[in-house]
Length: 157
Length: 286
Image (tube, rainbow over all chains, first blue to last red; front, side):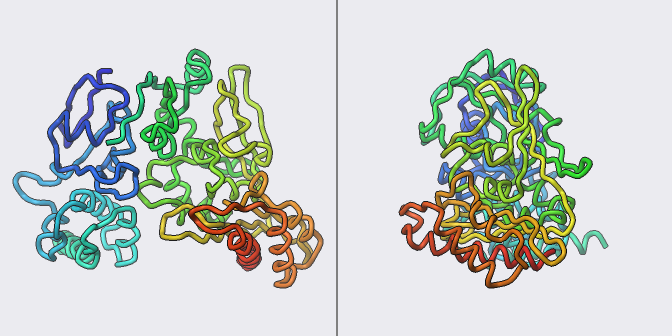
């Protein structure tokens, strides 16, 4: 089946089998390996991408379901060579150790700050509660997202 | 790597089109919306439908609104939308209680209300919620729509009243004043399926319970409800003693099974205790 998916603002047209999962479309068809592939059971959340701006677990979405829609992956966060505030936050606050959960965490964090610009710790923990950090580095992930929220708040002033 | 077996994929552009596709592909076709029950089952090859009919584009099924004296919830409303709807959760706090503990926020972004009910998993939270609320399911077929009381909707594990060539289009929940509701769940870890859970809906008139709804999840309660406990409560003043007695009655009449989530006697204990707690919380909210 021929599908056209807009990924990070670029349309990509491919012939795919309906059973192809979005995570494999991104990684294997488009070579965007920033989206990681973990538990394959919609539990761990490392495969999280944004579909029309909303975080979804791409191991449980068919690529054909994204036909005509907008997907954002970690590769799409950077703008004009500058990292997104959530990426900077993870750098500044040591928000990653092994890095496996990081792309999904970043996309969830981006959505959270787009909808709740100044989240408290509880809101951040709730937002990332569908994603597992194998390093158990949640403290620093929360701190990183707080850092990004503060940086964006500062920039708005 | 988990890969579903091959299937044909069709995208419906209207409800009549979806029904036409269901008729064309026959009983081995499945409707897919959020896909968060069906796609994992297909990946494990527990389900091998010959065709998927994608209804994600049917925005007419995504409505959530009060119409006359009912809350109408489209089958395609996502869990996250129900949780975020103050109209729904102010009228029926039981939705907020339940949705907060269904899977996780990212799964809730995608999974749908209709999908949860049609999956009819015995451990699925919303089945008990709608059962406690005495909702009505609206099912559409080629010859028009029909309504089914939610307590006739679930016919067994993974079995519903929806025929292969029909589509659940919306749920209707009766609104009445003097009503409180709550849902209480015990799970092994955050976001898990319940070990057991109970929902309660109480309507009090002139100091006595005019109608009680008790929903039970994952404890083998037929139609996800506890009619004996409801009958016991009707006509009594709300009180801790009455709620405890109703909990004991609910526990007596369910049939929990021992599985990886816990032994049957523990689940029966939870059925009693969670029913009591849900009733008490519902009464507080009237």
